[in-house]
Image 1 (cartoon, rainbow, N blue to C red):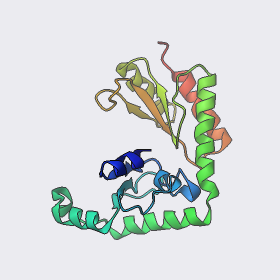
Image 2 (cartoon, rainbow, N blue to C red; image 1 turned 45 degrees about the horizontal axis):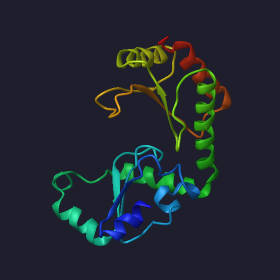
Image 3 (spheres, rainbow, N blue to C red; image 1 turned 60 degrees about the horizontal axis):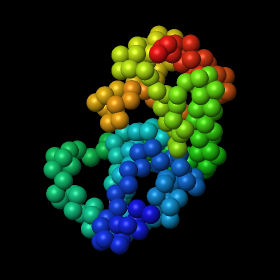
Length: 200
């Protein structure tokens, strides 16, 4: 729908695939591919190599004229250095692994939905995941920080987001599902999060 609106008004569509690449669509090709927009002349995709691909840096994918424009005018890119060969190699190896083992993509989403289901069943407020991230609401910024610290002390590292890094003003823990987590590990993570949860 957004692509259609952009085309109707002569605009380009820029899609951030930071959480989609490696998790959404056939073989983890991302939301743009799943929507049938991959390679479209009016669609630009930005993606990170540091999430599902386990590397560093990022990419911009799009029409040649857009890429050429960025290469020649994006000041932060002009004065930056290229990705180191090890990072490029790691990202390529991850992409090859996804191609060989596409079942990993479904497993990540299964783990994320399992986390979501168990946390909400325990009475916590969580956002149903579209990809691999499960956000769990905290009562306040201070309690979110304490909760994350208590989780860490119990051996579980979770993200902690609070204003101003969250525009809606809702503090939360952010959990990232991985396809290699066992049911026992998921159970343990849920147990730690529930046991350390603030009491409003």
